[in-house]
Length: 198
Image (cartoon, rainbow, N blue to C red; front, side, top):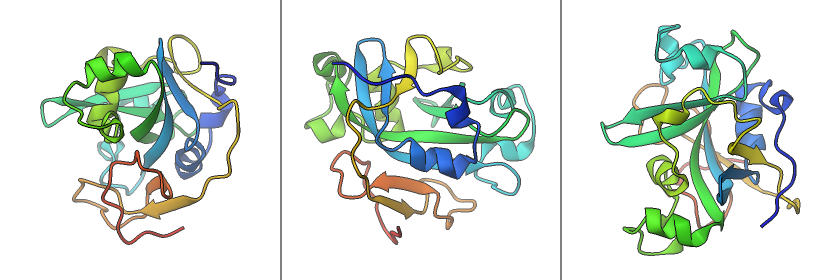
């Protein structure tokens, strides 16, 4: 399956919320597998205490303060890896968590990686499922997502999207901020849509 051009660095060198909304409908590609981004969350700098960057620059968070368009991959609950893409100009923290995909290429490979999934909607409907489905690990932390095997591409056909904004999922600090974005009505999102707003 063919997709459009790779998103350039300038796409990510913008406000994190703009990037989080803009990634919806784009295509995450890793080797022979690909999926349409249907759900994202924005993590901001400054007073966003849910963001890892809130503690400043550490060995773990250094990539978030670096050049936009790089991957920030970390482990949660000691077992699930999460893929984020760094946004904002270098030196300004911000990243977007990719929460769910609609599988679009390499379906048999994705199914083999996600044997526990009972239906197609479960293959990549959550950040930990997404990285398993796409074979993304902490080894990809810091990689440049504007070139190489792990990239985001334009879709070949642009569709009009209706975007919902909701509170982020699974956090305790700054939990009321409407920084989770989904394609309204898409059956591949991770669920938990509540208090939704456009």
